[in-house]
Image (cartoon, rainbow, N blue to C red; front, side, top):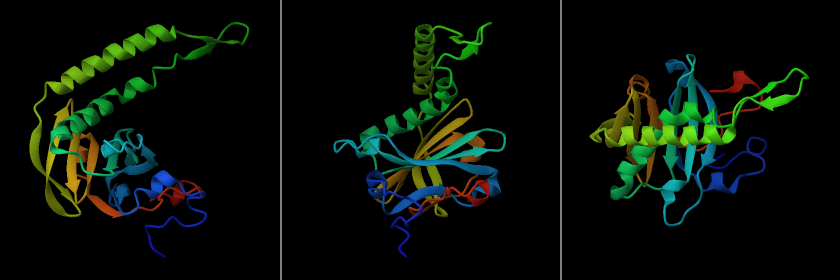
Length: 210
C-alpha cells in the first residue's frame, strides 16, 4: 500500500487537512536513540492561500527529562523575505511554551469543597502578554545565523537563531521546508529525515509508539 495514503483504521475519518500534506514530512529518525518519545502529531495553523507557511504538519517529541523538541513541515517553503520571521517566531514560541499553562487561572477548593479561581484571569493574561512581549524583544535582538543543517544525511543551507539555549532552525527541503525547534544541543545532535506522511501514534498504548 502507498505510504502516502492513510490506512483504514489508522486515520478514520481521513482528515482533509492532513491529506494536503501527502508527500514527504519531517521526523526524528529513531527518536528513542535520543531519549525522545513522540508526544503529538497534528496539522497546526490555518490554510491561507496567500501564506502557505501558516499551515504545518507537526511532530512534537519530549525527552525523558521533560524537554520539548518539535519538527514542523511547512506545506510550502517560505519566501526569502519571511524566513527570518518564521525562525524568530518559532524561537519565541518555544521560549513562551511554559507560559501557556499559566494562562488559565488555576482553581482550588474552598473550605466547602467548591472550586474557586486561585487568581484573577485578567491579571494573569496581562502578565502573560507582558512576558510574551519581553520574549519577542529578546529574540529580535539575537542575530540570525546562516549555516548548514543535515536533513536526510545531507547538509543543507539553513537559517537559525539561538536564545537561552533554545534553537530554531529553518531548512528548505525541496518545495517544502522544515522548522526544528528545541534545546540547542539536542537540535544539533538528532538525525532529522523526511519520509512519506503516515501515522506514527497508535491507540494501542505506549508500546506502539515509534
